[in-house]
Length: 229
Image 1: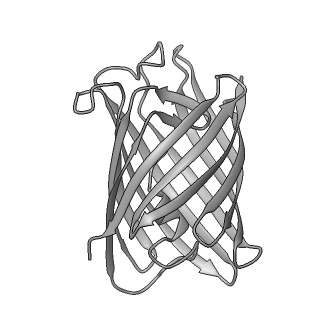
Image 2: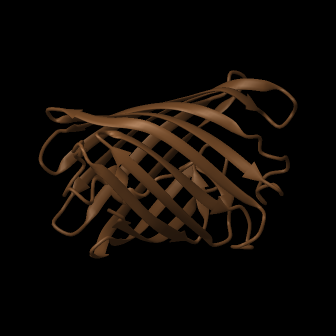
């Protein structure tokens, strides 16, 4: 699943993909509005989605909540709600993020799947390296030890991905590639896209997303992020 805004990940509040670890309480919130919900190359909901989040942090430690509608009913009972905690830090040109996430699903299924998605946990580690002042490369490893595959079998799922971002004056270009391994099967996914900030904290993005098991998707997103403290 996907959560946490582009601004938190890209460090929009500190001017680039660096990590703030000031010894003071920090708070962020925001919302992303998209024409679909796509994660790991899979389209979970082809209807418009509204995905708000709130996050608090202190000295590199942080925790937050993210949610998304699971079908065309934006305010209905069919939802995903994610809870996450972690630690972000940096060492020279490398920033890193260690995280634990709990993904929960309420009421009905996601409309694009023929089985009820189970709640599950994932451990995530990522690191970003600044090749230049404008070019950044990020590697990510996600491991979910127990996921119901929809057929009554519990499997471990590993998600490996590599992404890159290049920051122009007012535009960011990005590309990513990833693989999912669920012990018996898996798939590949990839994307290319562009994003730009249209005002303080507000951005728009356009992404082409594809995978080895689903048709491609053009994802258009408008998001806004702001500091609470």
